[in-house]
Length: 114
Length: 234
Image (cartoon, rainbow over all chains, first blue to last red; front, side):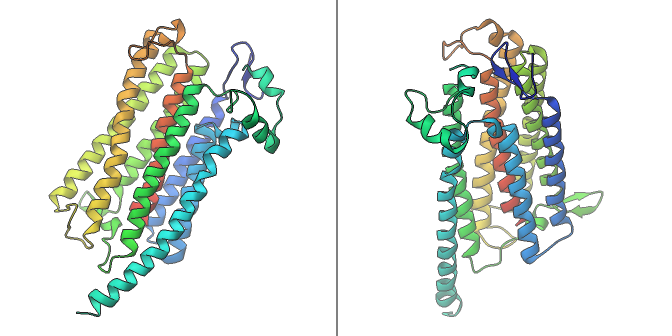
């Protein structure tokens, strides 16, 4: 017997209705199509980057939450997995600053120096 | 720990200190193999992040113009160059295979042996298609003169980042395909119904193995989402 929350009492395993997977699948297709359209219509500048990031994070969130079942996992596992991502965000910030410095020095010494 | 006793534990934020402070099992209701797969995927996330961050830094700090990906990866369709056509198809193939994997996991938990096996096989075929298209893309770019140290389109770093990042991702897909075929065979043979012992592990397993395999496969798709956004679209 499977009740609404999807807890299978007889076998003590968790299963979910097929509809949710098909919905997420469809959404992923639509979001991928949209992100391809960003390139198709050649949006440039801030609009392009914002749209790319929005579609990317939506897709990543849907895959992790529903396909990888994180939505149904206990908070401990979710937090252990997601907090380390802040370290990656810090690393990105550091390397943005480093990249700006590198291109600055290259302009000074390679381009202007010649 | 069975589901009914897990349901009695505190929920929400309170559950974190409770679970982590309890004896023996921090991840309640998570089979050890699944926890280990998650931890492996976390470390893999860091590896791919390092690749993508170094790509970001390399691209941001070059004084030569970066090749335009929508032209480099364009494909002629009936004489008209369509931007990113192959990459878009690869993206859809990988998402499709992620969907079939999700269904395989679902049927696995319902102990629907045949449906589970067929969906794993479909997933494997999707993965194989993806790897095939990637091989085509690589050989096309190599013919056009893209090398890890130079290319005819612009900044020389482009090739090294391209081959490193897509190559590492393609390796993950290939390993996943191999495991998908192995597990399709195991499912069809009924290993997870009879509790037949694994050849290498000598341990009994059940359909949670399919969920673990699914986690890996969805992760491969997840990484592609980021590669698609940052490498091909940006």
